[in-house]
Image (cartoon, rainbow, N blue to C red):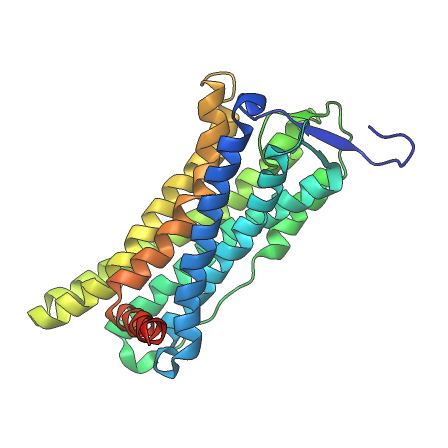
Length: 297
């Protein structure tokens, strides 16, 4: 703690052999972050610049990819800075803000994917009632972070490479925020899962009653969303469970596994939507072809 400025600092002790591999970590992380920015930005650019894609389904895809950019911005710049630091530290307020940003990204992802499931259900099963709404979830996460910020820290060494609310709460010897965190996760995840299962059961029912061509188009539209939702659920479970098993699993696993949720989904999402949805894929090919012609001329 810095008594002269009354700022509380936390030491990020979750890095594995940082002194030995810092530049390897930096190069790999920087390359991944650049790919995430490029992939998500390209698909979002295509959606924004093509009026024929200004429909709810594509707008939700754009929001999903933008959310990925916001979520990764909460992790990667600080992580890259830590790799080049002699001793990675962060202020308590910055740690709380990072936890708030990452959790908001996660809850927003679940909300968007749930609304997209409803969007697919209405467009396929009830095309004449095509209307959807989205809920911003930051207030729910804000309560969790405010509860954590009121706690008195007893330790100042965070055994993680980034901040999350559960790890911060462990520094305070309290179960209050942990209980609220589990409650928030429960009311976020389970309704979304139930809603998605219901939507896709209804979609499957409608598909079975229609033509082969109808089924092909419906599955082509739904597969990317279903794949992304399932993969995000898996990574979210890893993020929730892994910190609670610290001491029972190797430190390397507990340090690396939770980060995967901010590596694979932001990389997979634009690839799945860019390649599997013909409308977006054709626009990307057209844009790349024009660029190739301009460069060769």
